[in-house]
Image 1 (cartoon, protein in one colour):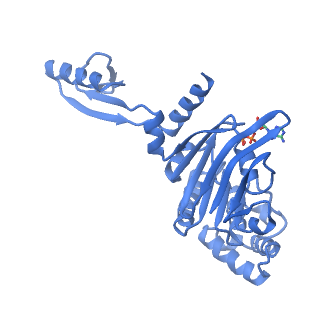
Image 2: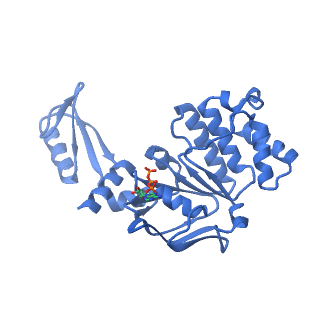
Image 3: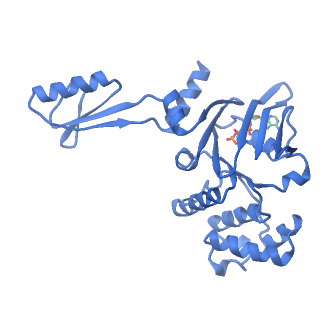
Amino acid sequence: MLVAQDLERLYGEFAAVKGVSLELRPGRIVGLVGNNGAGKTTTIKMLIGLLDPTRGKVEIEGVSTRQPKTRRKLGYLPEESPLYDDMNALDYLAFFGTLYDVPRKEGVRRGEILLTRLGLAKDAWRKAIGTLSKGMRRKIAIARCLLHEPPVLVLDEPTSGLDPGTAHELDAFLRELRSEGKAILLSAHNLGQVEELCDEILVMHRGKLVARGTLQDLRSTFGTVQYRVKATLPFPGSQPDAAIHAATVARLADVEAALSHVKREGGIVLEVESLFPSLEDIMRRVSSEEHG
Ligand code: ATP
């Protein structure tokens, strides 16, 4: 659907993005993660045709996203999306639709459907946008980027700054969009959200994609499994934890040593749990390897 090849962007001598290639396909959510300054926004701007790459290209079905016609296939949600505070949601959406040649009446119809799906209470549809809460405004911004029915969505921090309930609702909506076949790029600092939602994760560091794959792929490449052993009596390396004794160990041999110690002393091993690294652990590791 959307293919980006070997994107590079220089600002003077400084390369903000170096050799990024990626693909967005229908029915998949790709997560783009990285620390501040990693190059995510610069990459996104090139993907949506807002910024010319110094090298490389971005195409949707073989046509550059620099072409206005192709941009109609894209829905873009910026991190900060200014809305027209004096307008009401439906007028605003209908107005936005007309910029994409969606007739006004059809814009209102689509707006009503989207706002309903997004769970925006009906009595808010005709209120001035400026009087609505942050979560409501975010829903209107999301409706706006879907109004012209684009097959590709680029979403920059769709739920940042929202309360957990609203964020959860929007995550459920993103899952629905995926199952309807949208090709989605999700840039987010909330790594838990990326772990939950994304079919593929791209880790960006200093302008490069330094890791990519499913969470499981990243775990097997960059993560190390640890083990948490819990027992009724102390064993080497354990700490008291409420009424029991527990230790986190890195090697299976340490697990075995703990098991035999506890058994020898007449105690009981209550649990051996595998601890998988989180995306956060993986990112920390990727960044420190790059520094080293
Ligand atoms: P954040 O998570 O903080 O938004 P980011 O991953 O989106 O960060 P970018 O905004 O793409 O990162 O910036 C990547 C690098 O390019 C940074 O070092 C930034 O200072 C630099 N940069 C971005 N835009 C410009 C510009 N217009 N001129 C010069 N340097 C820029």
